[in-house]
Image 1 (cartoon, rainbow, N blue to C red):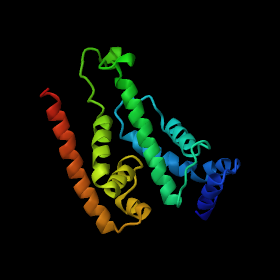
Image 2: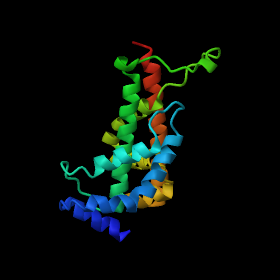
Image 3: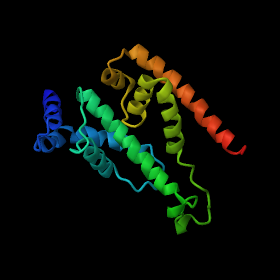
Length: 192
């Protein structure tokens, strides 16, 4: 994947053709990451994996926002972060009152069941993850790679340049911390 690193450097230098050369090299891997992430979304998600890849890619190679990637791993970590932000923005749009806020889509076939789908956990996770990143930035990056990019512990450890033992320890702690934070937000929400 030395080509990816070279092309990323070319993009950074402002080469207009570099972005065109990068997409074919990273598309399949980005598509795989997006598909894994979209499989974890609630039913009724209108955003497709292909659209998620394209939107993330556009944000990553935006010439007006000169970004610098140190390596292929850094690029894919940035891609995971871009996908996370896109999904959070989509969840916020779905919940906004301007777009029907607390209303849930219900197919006529399921009208008799009238079971409300679960809340979008992605917003709670995003808020908790933002708090966690202020305390443990490297562990938060690990969570982003695992949850939003669908990487295994081993892959995420390699991308972050840490040992698998450290990654496993950080993952266990992060999961517990985030679970506690999300549960406290949910239980605290009704006490206002």
